[in-house]
Image (cartoon, rainbow, N blue to C red):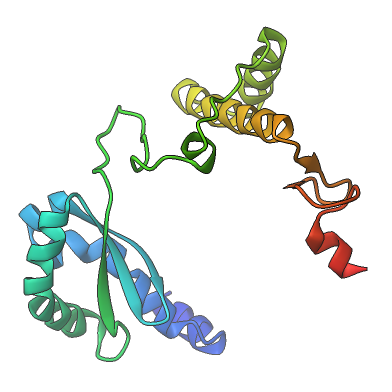
Length: 186
């Protein structure tokens, strides 16, 4: 089985990608329990592994520990795959608590615009749609909340004068019934 996997990955030029993806499974083992509790590898792009950290203090500390972490990664995965580590500060995920995201005001909030409330029928339609597609009740509630926020943002944009593109459905402030991207495609 292992031989088949290696041969398939080699044929698809995915050998390096497979090796790098292993970092997500062995991260805690490589960095130890204390660091693993405050960090989580998020994604890998063009030789750079981006790691989410729980605070700026941890990011600073990890900058000092970066050479040792890089050596451990090279020893485990091979040299040349991961060229650099970057730290991204984000609140730590705690099971059972919804992820609030960074405390960054949206462009609408910066302008002092409150998101309009949805009519009860709109909220019920979103909840019904989500419940029919998502079996896990906790996940369904999270998805419904996300979709309600998107609908409220769309209403706020429309109140500001934005229109919906008839081709792709995105909001735009341009002239006509098509967004600038769809107009360029013609």
